[in-house]
Image 1: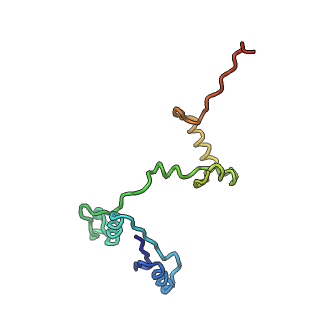
Image 2: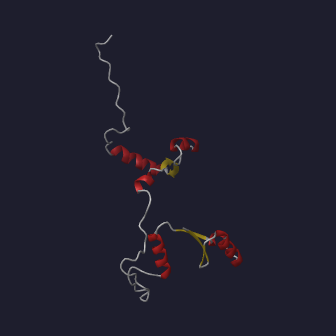
Image 3: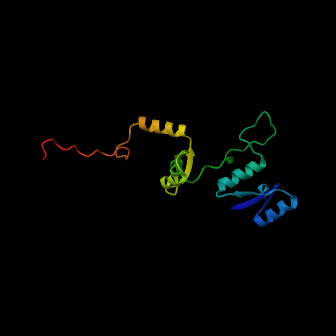
Length: 148
């Protein structure tokens, strides 16, 4: 579900929210898009609008405290962090863009400094490579001295 917000008003249609924003004389950044994909996200959003807190605080002793079972933060959904980490390639900032694009192979490019690159290279060289990795291919057999 998608709703749009402008100055404490919610709209189901973007053009209505945008017209209201222009009527108020606000910049385009004042239009917020809110995507709610699960019941937990909806409950967390509505509880946040109501001002519910996990526990009472000294700064706001009258703020309502959430009852047991109320959702204040939705559980993260989607891909595991490991999968997300594989969607980008870290490329040192001294590599030309055309080579970086070739190395990335369609993945997102994240530029890193030369110092970060050297640190990651040093840690990769100091850790033992797992068996079956592509780090060090086997060397070809040496010729025997007795062969003609």
